[in-house]
Amino acid sequence: LLVARQYNGVVWDTAHVVQPYLKEPLLRNGRKWDIRSYVLCTSLLPMRIYLFTEAIVRYASAPYAPNSSERAVVLTNTFVGKRVLNSGVSPITGSLHDLAASYDRHNASRPAYVVLLERMRLTIAKLFLAAEPSFERTYRDKYSRVFACSNCYHLFGVDLIA
Image (cartoon, rainbow, N blue to C red):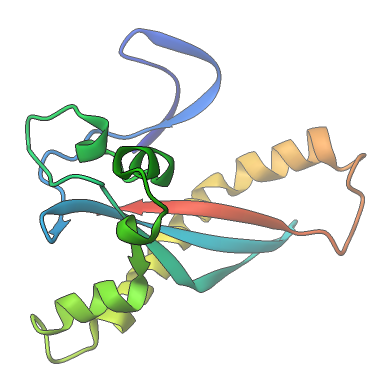
């Protein structure tokens, strides 16, 4: 994972997060999945964040095939899934509790939900710590004159890919 203004010959005006494609994703019921979590930032200077523990697990709308490039197979995006299945999001979304329960049988010493939340907190904390200088710079340069508000907050959607 890296932040770059160019990658493989493509140049952008602003920095982008670039990560390699996962060749062997963790599957559940034969499908790729990710976790959409929400983080509330109540202060940028100094940074103060809170993780909402009721995350959404999003599933690809078709079973995984290693060499496929079909959107329904490789994307966990709910917009794509609704169109492919011609339905709402219920068949392609689930709860963090359900996901963790499916892994509890593999490790009886600690509940998978607890382990998953600990790892999510650690990963998200590292992500926001790495982004903190950029947030501070952006806030000071662009938003401090517009949003001079001590009671303002930011809500971030953070996707964790397995």
